[in-house]
Image (cartoon, rainbow, N blue to C red):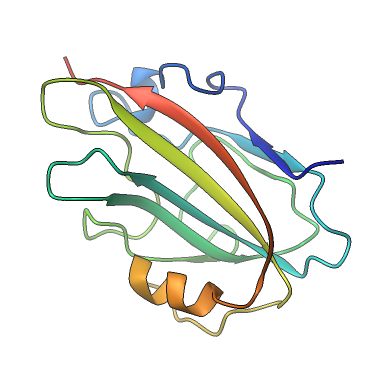
Length: 151
């Protein structure tokens, strides 16, 4: 079985509901996954917008997620599980879509199954630090994409 990531909040490639954006309650969508490699010891999540005007914008970093978990409930709060990194809004946890007015942006939810229980990063690590720590530890990666356009 392939490693898959999905959400009941929106279909793959579809519009992300306003509830999950800066125009709504800015709640993280629920996420679920399955089919990870049997030897996965933890998971790491990165959510990013490659269409941001200044380059890829990081919306959420969460790592050291226990291997027994296979979902994140809507409205995740930092400290609930795993370790939260610093997003590009300068906050721990989720920061929803909030692009400038104009065309739609794509938001990639990427979940990596890792061969280690912990990456050894403190809370508040940045995207570059997480990407560096992931090197050589990714067993598989699942991806889910949604779109958002600001009104």
